[in-house]
Length: 309
Image (cartoon, rainbow, N blue to C red):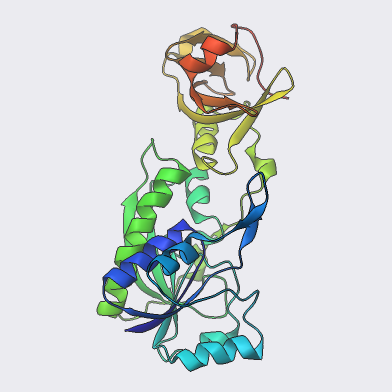
């Protein structure tokens, strides 16, 4: 099938690769303009652009899709459908109407749950036991279009946003190929079951140790790798990358949340509002991510010290 593909990050690049491997003709790839990134703030190409160039696919990087010249470019391609995955730009109604088979979106949740920008992180924060991929026929609403295909996957206690992202990206590639090969009858979304996955803000990353141990750990997992869960040690920022709820709760029943209870090769035990958290991997500002044992080899921490504001 002749397609336009629109996407920007790694999640979308995996889908582009799957469509190309399945033999679809990618007549045009849309991705966001190169952005300054890194310490030198040099212009960096999106992962989708990198993959498209590797496969010698034509690429366009408009700042928006509302102008007549951009819409004329899309019409001139004469694609049957447009596939959209984490593109980052709004498709106006005029663009949605261009391909005869419309625009299909690869969304990383089981819609109507977690419409919006951060479905993977919000599912982890909420303690969901399952997530998945939805292939949706796009309309003018925010992830409100009819469902063409869904596939679920369990969320494990060890999943971070990074591990879940990678599994969902692979599933998204498989699902969009299936949806194009064997179209299903569209299913209208249940508006009563809809939830919204707001974009994750950096302000959310600070760990509130007064929360339960389970909720603290969910936040650490949800913010790995971006923006990274943070706490303070003597006014210096620490990022906490991996942690688990502690099972040996008898030793910290009366401890103030945020109090370090013990330090050892098995991790740094910190009191929470209910239970305790064992930090397994962390990082000083400007330092490397380290297992707790390696971190403690270079940083002296004692029971009774306090993490937090």
